[in-house]
Length: 261
Length: 283
Image (cartoon, rainbow over the protein chains, first blue to last red):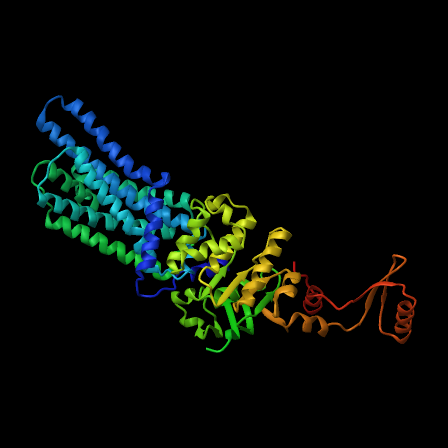
C-alpha cells in the first residue's frame, strides 16, 4: 500500500515559475554542489586534464604534432568526464539525497512546484559544467578565437543539458544515494568512456559519433587544431538526444512524479 | 470564506481491491483541533495525504480552505503547514539555514525565524547543523518550519510519537497556543491522553471507518453506562462505589464522617471507549 501511496506524491504542480522559489532552490543546490561529495567530480576532470597534459608532454618529447594530438586527447577526456560525471552523477545523487532524507516531500509540500524544483536543480549544475569546461580550455593552454569560444560555450551548454536531464531521470529512478551511484555507472561508462576510446577503433568511433559526449570530444579536438567546428550532423545528434532525454523525463515524471519508488 | 477550514464528506479510498478509508465525514473549524484517533493502519495518514492533495480520494468530497482536494495545487501549501514522519530536514545545513530556506520559499520575514527559534528554545542551537539535533529538537524544528508562514491549517501526523514526556508537553503547549491564535489543527495520534487534552473534536478511526465522533467529553460520557466513583479514604484504602441506593447512602456516610480524602468519577477514557467500540486496543 505504501508504494501505491507514494506514487501519487509530488506530482502536484502549477505551470508558473515563482522567481523567489526558484532562486531559493538554486541557492541550496549551488551550496550542495560545493560540498565534498559533489565538488570532487569537476575537480577530478580538471586534475585529469592537468595530469594528462604533463604526462603527454613527457611522452611527446618535443614532437609538436604529436603533442597537439595528445593535448586534444587530454582536453577531450577532461570535458567528457566533466559533462558526464558532474551532469549525471551530481544531479541524480542530489535528487536521490532529497528523497532519502525526506526533504523532497517537505519541499514539495511547501509550495515549490515540479518545474521550479527541476530548473533549480539543473541550472547550478549547468553553470558548474560550463565554467569547468572554460577552465579546461585554460588548463589545456590553448588560445581560441571569439567564434571558437562561442562555439565551445554553446556546445558545452547543450551537452550539459542532455547530461543533467539524464541525471534527473536517474535520480527519479533511484531510491537513495547509493542506488543513484549504482544506476549512474552504466550511462557514465557509455557517455564518458566510449568517446575516450573512439580514437582506437573505427566501430567505437561510429558509436561515439552518436553520443553527445562524442560530439563534444570532437569539438574539443577541433579547437586544438585551430579550426573550431561542429558538423551539422553533430548538432542534430545533440538536439535529438536532448529531445529524447526531455521526453523520457516527462514520461517518467508524469507517471511517478519525483518519487518513482 | 466561512470559519469551516476542512470538510470531509463521505470519503472513500481504495488501493487496488483494498478499501482503506470508508465513508469518512468530519469538519474542522478555525481555532479548533480535530483529532483522528486510531491504531497504526487505521487510515490516519491516508486521510492527511488526501487532505493535503498528496493522494486522491476514490470517492467523496473533501475541501481544505474552500478548495476541493481534487483542485489542489502547490499554492495551497502557502496556507497550510504539514508535519509528518516524512518531514525531513537538511542535515548539513544549520538550524537557522533550514528555516531561512523555507522562509525564502514562503516569503517570510527573517525576523519570524528568530521569534520562533526563541519560542521553542532552539535559538541557542541556531548555528548547529540540523543533523546534530536530538529527536525532540528535530521535531520542534520541523514544527516551527511548518508554522513559519502562519498557516491557516496545520496537519500533524503523530507529532509526539517517540518523544519524551517533557518534549511532548512542550509541543502540546505550542499547539494550544497556535489554536488560540486561530489556527485550525488536524491531528492524528494513537495517544488518547494527547487527544483528550488537546482536541475539540475527535474521530475514532478503526479499519478506515469513523466508529465514533464528538468531543472527548461527549464520547466518554456516552459510554459511561455504569456510573461509579473512586474514593481514597483517610485510612489509605480505596473504594469504588456505584449509584445503587445503598452505595449512595454509604458515600453520604463516608462524606459526613469526613473519611474521604479524594473522590473521582470513573467515566471511561477515550482508550476504553475505543476498546468498547472496536474490541481492540489503540496501541
